[in-house]
Length: 564
Image 1: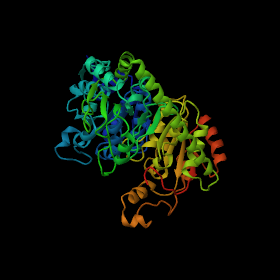
Image 2: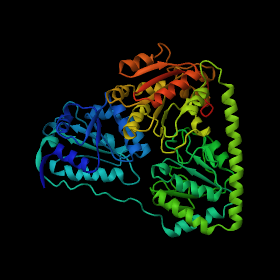
Image 3: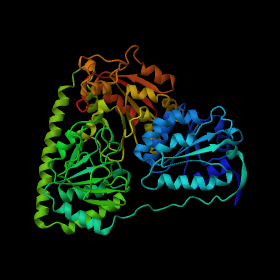
Image 4: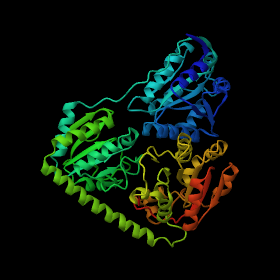
């Protein structure tokens, strides 16, 4: 037992769990905790000017480091500002401990200024939410929060910390949270049935998601795909957060389309599908017919959450267990189950898929080359420049979906799978802060943030943190001066004014935002570039440099094919 304050116990247990950074923006109700940090050299306080970049930085740091992220927010208003980023973390399954100071319990009944039911607010988008009512409960609350956040399916948790509980002292048990090995193998019988179903399929396919790379299972998935000669499709743009399969591999079938009828058409040729590491499926806008996975596809579904298996589409074989272990054991069983004839068929399927994918990529390169002389640059030209200069170990954070259109993947330009991060919750403002957190976790990897100008404005205060801590991220603002995704969506819905090219509240050009001056006012050097060759040279310099830098790139207001 150790005599310490509630704030001291909180920090002690975090340090014992390996936490070295606490991301925050303080207010009055957080002062006891921030004061305790002044004498604690184990945990660095990373200051953000607003809760959106604070949460996004912690999110990126946790995803890249594959460790616990910790956030301290101001009471009700600070939590309110952070809710969009909490929704993103919830959708991603990022292991975060989100805390906020709470009003002193002695005046709580009076409903004082800033007080609120923060547990009720945070609960829908967290795995667990609670208010610590006694200093004696602080150690158990922190241990429970750590274990809950890190246990698959991982995700954020929330603790409200009253001011008086932070300050009060007591004799407390500061035994660290247990370090659990969460790898649980799927049942042997289910794995055997899955191997038999896939080995006997005439034309198997694979649909894979972010949890494959997050569980270090890319190599295991690649081995299974090669054994089956099966193409691997990643999630569609609305939930395509990480890269589950090498994009230059001959079996990478690119991402699924957005709309259910298009997904169904793409998957209709397969008689069996292995589904792994994603929620099947998170659709965007309703389309008829609504069923995205054809009933003719027999599903093998591997996931760590029983809630996801068969949730929307019945699985003939459900595999509940660790992603990496399940794929490794499935691969070994496929080796034993496949006959010589099935192996030959799989090899032929793989060759055929590889040739088809190479043809599609070559056609895309021809199309992009034809756009090169257009001014302003087309989105495709911007992305082809990026593809030509990114180094092999780059980390790419995307929040410019109508510009990027997964072109880095479609061109096979990403040599690593773990360094790719994109939206899964779609609360805007995430990308800029996420990139800072990723670079803090990976100080030796060049980091590139591709941001829409509208999305950047939601979290622009994060540039100040990049400057303060000298986090060398290259921020590229893909600037078309409007909310293109909304215009494309309105056209897709057939809305009458949109069909005539008339829009309300979707243009950002009156006045135009001067991102160079804005970045410089927050301490980040910036430049505006309109020429592809100049952009390539600037990107090379910035990615190899040791300071944060923003590049504002004007691009054409073109209609994006995947949304239009």
